[in-house]
Amino acid sequence: MLAIIGGSGLTRLATLAVARREIVRTPYGEPSAPLVFGQIAGRDVVFLARHGHGHTIPPHRVNYRANMSALRERGAHAVVAVASVGGIRGHRPGELVLPHQLIDYTYDRQHTIFDGGDMKVVHVDFTHPYTPALRAACLAAANEGGIALSDGGVYGAVQGPRLESAAEIDRMDRDGATMVGMTGMPEAALARELELPYAAICVVVNHAAGRGDSAQSISMEALVRTLEAGMEKVRALLDHLVALVPAPDDAR
Image (cartoon, rainbow, N blue to C red; front, side, top):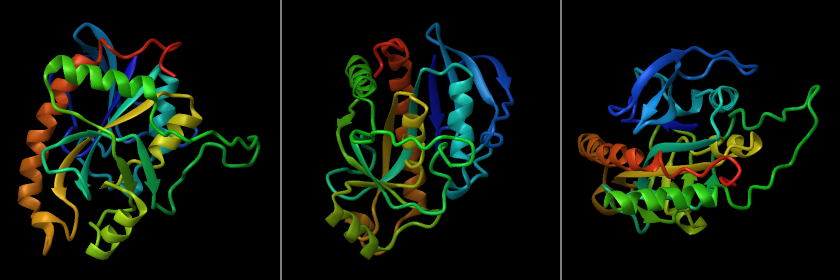
């Protein structure tokens, strides 16, 4: 079963035929919202609104451990996460991007399920944060649906909820980040610890601070308009993706 995590602008899926909603309790607390189970194009899917259904949970307060643990516990075998980002280099507003790497700038978040106590310490390989087979399925779905999806980018995960300064974006650019968002970590790392194949579809909603038409300030009104249009493309892509997600044995 494919799990879809919706970010800003994607709190529901119009084509999801809902079968049930389930409140899940995990060793890490409750996830951001009830899990919504149903079908898209005849395929089982579970949906989770990362920021809650009313978008009330800021990125640094999301219980990422509970979210990922709940999805794993309830039978998800792969996770596609949707997120909005700012474009630093090579990405323009309105573009959909499938990142292949990330840099973590977050702090004070619960980053691991292997947190000591009575659990053994496990060091997972994180060389390639996004699962190649699942990324390939996303690209195939975009091709099938005639949806432009840029292959590759480096996601810089920041703390939020404020946006960045121009100097911070300059630093990230020097580090090699090509886009900036607030929810990419520890979500991706927790998926790896839980052995869940994971990929991210990012909607570029604005030029990052100090870039392009955000040179002086970022227009929140323009950002919202771009986000809404971008999420329509994401929904169409997901409709094609559900049938192409690799089986559990092939997803890694």
